[in-house]
Image (cartoon, rainbow, N blue to C red; front, side):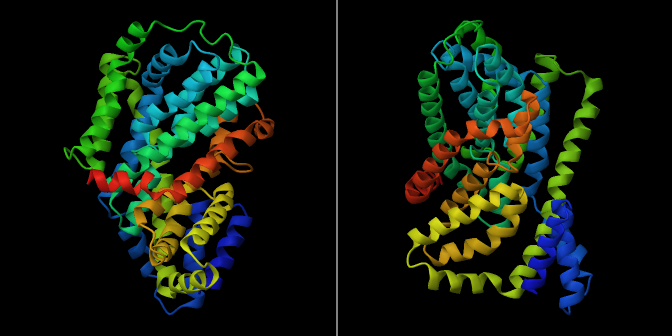
Length: 424
């Protein structure tokens, strides 16, 4: 059955069939032609794959991101960060990284971060003399923090598919996320100083006091969400619902950037995005069931132990594999298909599943801005109104910097596991 699953999946991908449909059809065809299972197992496994309380966090965080994008929250966060670091050379580029970090701690989505922050900062950087491809590349690489800094939708999906603690994974993502933030800021500072960009970044920024006052409500949001989760006040799923309510209060009643009449359109937009993710989850649940039934994880585990002499080489092989997977496969689908297969193998090498989850998510986040099919590339190119190919040369340094940070995260487990175990 494994060969049939692989054949059908690759065929459908090659025919440009949508990811969720490809995974679902590959599973259905394999069941019908190469197994004795009744087709009744298809709706059963797809339903049980979605019948999960933690998964409710996904549509809530997606809705919160949509509301924040349209509700003036992202604009106030940008102005606040610009008031802090915008006065130095390369301050706008550094503001992009830092604002993405803060926005990531609310939305949990890299694409939402790209549109919400990029629509403000990419034009601002261009006006201040940054080349458009460079501005778009900085935004695309910084937006990956949306799936690393908790709360993170991919971390939730990994937790659900491998039965790992979501709270531990959220804690484990903090230091790796901050590591990438520091690495990217160092990169943009060196880049700007070597090329002479960002000399006028201090123009048109607000005084710190005024910017802090305007952004005070927005800045409280990550404190409430993250503090509530880690303080044991509410679960990650409940935190997602709280983020929606808080974003609505800010955007509708305090900032008044959204009217009541506009809410149905925002809800429809969030529902479409959530539906696409949930279809992938349902199809991947059926696919994972068939993979487990076939014994493939055990076969891969035996092969890995024969091929890799130590966890060091195993993790290196996994990083290479995920780097290429991330270039072509949508992140949610990659996690839901690969995590149930690879995590048992990692555990057999003595690797903590929480640490391994962070490695997977950071690696696939790298794929979000890696050519040819990185989703952040297309989002940033759309915002910047340039062909995505023009960004490729400007992506070399961001990719190398994040790969360096990934190696540090991979081989220093204390950066993730240490914080997770300390926090629980």
